[in-house]
Length: 102
Image 1: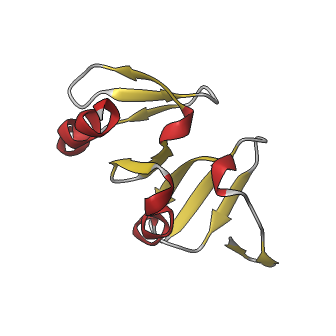
Image 2: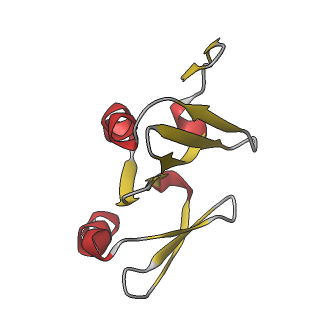
């Protein structure tokens, strides 16, 4: 991951989720670290597309390996193994439910 000081090497399997903040993305790692990189979530999504990640919301990309629970609602929410709860957008709900059922 390109950081302010150089590059940080992280195993893809150690990334729990990614959260967007305009042109920056925060990576949440299994060891508790939060790594901020100067990339849009769309760029990150393209990088991680083939590794079991799913974009559940405009600002959230999750690693399905760490999915613990889906909570029903308008769009719903997902609970991840680190205890974080992330909203699923109404637009993504149907596609997300199909994806996790297959």
